[in-house]
Amino acid sequence: MLTLFLRAVFLDLFVLLILRLTGKRQVSDLQPYDLLMTLIIADLASTAIADTDIPLLYSIVPILALYLVQQLLAKLSLKSSAMRRLICGTPQILILDGVLQETIMRRTNYTVRDLLDSLRSKDIFEVGEVAYAILETNGTVSVLEKAAFQKPNKRELGVEPGSAALSHLLILEGKIQKSGLNTLHLDREAVETMLKEHGLALKNVFFAQMNGDGELHVQLDRTHQSRIYHYSVST
Amino acid sequence: MGFSVFRACMTVLIAIGLLALFIFPSQYLVRFSDAANETIGHAVRALFHGDLSAASAQCEVLARSVREDMPALERFLNHSDVDALDAAVSRAASAARLGAFTETLEALTEAEAILRRIRGIELFSWNSLL
Image (cartoon, each protein chain N blue to C red):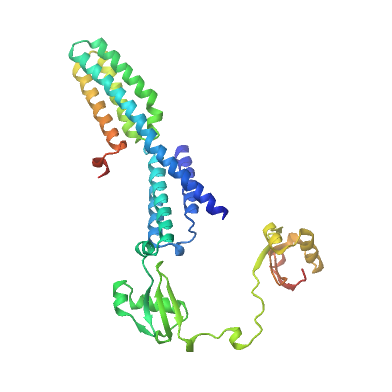
């Protein structure tokens, strides 16, 4: 039993390392080939975990071989567009100027229902509003609406755009997060002072986030009814 | 940048590691199986010459060498194949000790067949590839 446990832990860490090395993080990032490789790796690992008759090398060698092939194909895809087309395929236009491209849809086995689903998930309910719908090589559909149906942006409306400042996690469960401090160029004392000024204690804060404009969002823990505060502070 | 360099280094190390795995285990297996086959040959010849004590001594040598090499063999061969080989040579040694000609010969032939199978799996050939 201990052997099974240790084999499982070892192979889990090994597969984790290999998947991190491949550089893909989400299933939605994966090309069909990458997804297939991930499934094969999982199957190879599970075989050696469950069957102690098999040496670990019987799983490790094929997994490493798949990793090397994947790296090789990735390099070739970067170097040559023909190779990329061969491995990943090419994006296909499913709707052109509001017209469904029947031939391409048949060739790609993409049904009208699938396409309507994809459009609805992008808040588009009329095929006639679409200038381009493109089936990407990872299976997602990108949509460009016709100019008349596109939402105007702040610049077009002449509205003050404000800043697009990213928020950073500052406090989590009463603990100051170093990465947030570094990004916002703050120190621990400054955060504690900031909280004190608003009558809050660090240990009572469940979650606090601050953006580059100095807007601080604080939520207290449940013993303080998860109260929420929003402050603008000068940093 | 840092991760790309790490990945490139890991990829090179993996390629070198795989290359080592293609070369060294097969060399080890060739050495081991050649020696085992030679001992089996000596034992069989002794059996056919009616020298049961010499055959028994060869079987003991074979059983000892398999037992010594088992941990190394199990790192890259299916454990059930290695166990079957160990069982066959142990049976040959016991049968030879008891002077049982047929059983000894049977067990030695089985050991030879197992050696041939594991060589076929581990050593590259177009037949085993397909």
